[in-house]
Amino acid sequence: MPNKHIKVTVLGAAGGIGQPLSLLLKLNPHITELALYDVVNVPGVAADLHHIDTDVKISCFMRPENKEEENKPLQEAVKNSNFVIIPAGIPRKPGMTRGDLFNINASICAELATFIALNAPEATVLVISNPVNSTVAVFKEIFVKHGVFDAKKLFGVTALDHVRSNTFLSELIEGTLPNHYDIPVVGGHSGHSIVPLFSQSKGDVSLKILNDENILDALIHRVQYGGDEVVEAKQGKGSSTLSMAYAANKFFNIVLNGYLNLKITELASYIYLDNAIPGVTELKRDLKPLLDSQHLEMPEFLATPMTYGPDGVAAVNYSWVKAMNGKEREMFYIATDFINQNVEKGVSFVKA
Ligand code: NAD
Ligand code: LMR
Image (cartoon, rainbow, N blue to C red; front, side, top):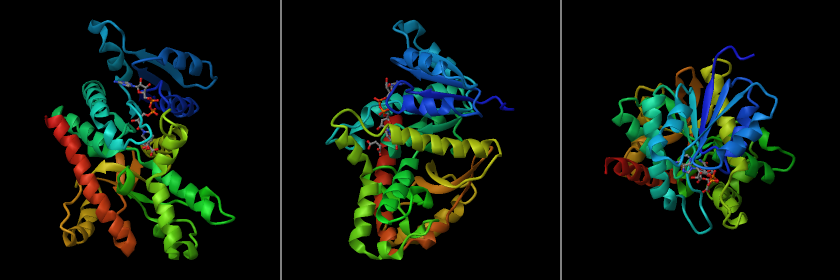
């Protein structure tokens, strides 16, 4: 029996990610209530999950046709939530970039952020909706507007890049499995903003692979553009949903284990680099000379490895900055430029 009441809300619960993610959450012994919200189709998903004989209570909320009542379900869905996970928004089709999703998804995120700010200001928020590099900035700006922003509790979910890195690397090294690896991935979550640090794997990465420029380049490219692989394979029927649900659940469990003081695990996520977070000052100190040498601005947001505790981020791990090799530093410079532009887009959207 869980000894603490844990309410988790999924916004966009009837979608391609929302459904399998909600299934995984329904199996979580630490969750008391799982609130499912969507603008369509969610009653069927909730009825289906409700039949599963685990202890997690399912509650269901859908936006009604009636404009006057429109706000109530979302208010109820997020009220008193400890965690709100957001896979709401449109996915890519072949030929699109994540940036092409910005206008629609930024509006959706701004609306959802406002309701969270007003009804669950203490909640820990996990943003999946793309483009993550910008949508997390939208969340931050709305939370700041409402005076409820806590950088330790707002995360862009980038765990899929780490999951892909482990999988793709294991395919190259005969006799190893994905779980032999724990590749830190920093930067952001789109194309060249994704920087897998294969030289810093906690598993045993064969030097032969790392020293073969062609193999390493192909591996890095596959991680950076892994999303395209799925978008193309799905032929217009969406992007990663099952691997994303797995990755979001993996990340959520790490955050939850920290919140419940059960286990400390390190995994990267995309956060606002607030100096109040342990490790951020040191991270900026170590990044500054590198970025200055390239005339690059310090990014306001960054995916970096960190640990999680009862208040959200426990500490950022900054040791990777000095440990980056020359190739990784070059990738990081390119990533920083992208991230700064993407963040600016999110901030301007809210300010406008
Ligand atoms: P989907 O279209 O299958 O599902 C999205 C759901 O959001 C739908 O059920 C839709 O009704 C709902 N929705 C739309 N507007 C809403 C609103 N205002 N409030 C609540 N729900 C709303 O898409 P998907 O495949 O589940 O992907 C969702 C998002 O996640 C996309 O933006 C996609 O790019 C992104 N994504 C991110 C990652 C990542 O690594 N962070 C990985 C995969 C996908
Ligand atoms: C992914 O990496 O699979 C997601 O960000 C979805 C996408 O658009 O590629």
